[in-house]
Length: 476
Image (cartoon, rainbow, N blue to C red):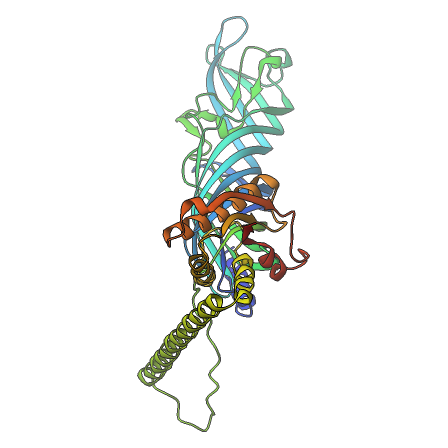
């Protein structure tokens, strides 16, 4: 088992090393999941019990939700349904217990079991709480706990039993009296497993692949290990119970019973707990797109092999100098563009004061849509703020202009969501105008057209960003 885990993990790491992720990430993910592998109710036969336990094939399905604090770290929960299969084989069990026959005579009931096989099946509803890490190359790993609520638990078994009775008064062993249950016969056992709440440790690792806009496919392996004993109480019933006749000789599950012998009593198992390991496929849908910085992806060293290799300190100094140069260049470029935009605004204002043609141009600028909103977002970014600043400057030049504000959305989302987002965009633009000196009574009303008035077809994310806009409409 350990070798399989090592091989599987190594293969995933090799696959993940070839994949690169974007800087943007989804804060929220909802998913559906299906998995399967070896699973069962795990236990070890007690000392002195001649038997073996084996896990069978099980299934895992469910729905999940993950919230990511950063591009790399998040927490997850959900609801899962797990199905466990197991098998217990007893090769040789000799039981001796005190009993009373149908005539009220006391005797020692003896039962020798050969080749008893029992299958256990159970189902649990599991609620996971996990922490998930995902690297820049889309490798992911998760770990945490699960709470398992038993839904069903059944057992079915059969074996060959030699039942007999030893009477001290007669000093005789009765082995062939079917009427009172003394015979060799094959008997079956079936019933309910009495289980309680389970606490499981869980780990999962694999690769996360993008398969479309805000859709991801998780491929990985999982391992669930029960931490507590899920048997509700210590067994008090014997494995084979004598009740006075053949028809009342009952066989119980070894998991829920004990065997009695001349030296005392002993349970077949000390502890039972769920155990599962297998592969899992999860289809995830991302919501709430945000910006972030993932861990940098390592790039190959392109230094000529004839040159001496840099020391770690030299490489760190070189990279720090390059980062500082890029930062200064970005600051200088931002300052230059800000100065150019300010000069352009002043020039536009001067021209607007001089001619009526400038007034018409001002109308066009005021009514030009301010677009580029992220999906379901209404907060103004720096560019959108600058565009509104230009409109505010023109509204100050022409104080008689009155407007109403319309918020627009793209075709993603239902009408209820788009109604809310469209109104939020209009309201935030109104708040920005008033905060920058535009009288409140000049803004006559707010409205939203949802996605009913697209400027361009909603055929790509670029077009959808054009349609996600706010527009100031001049009232004649």
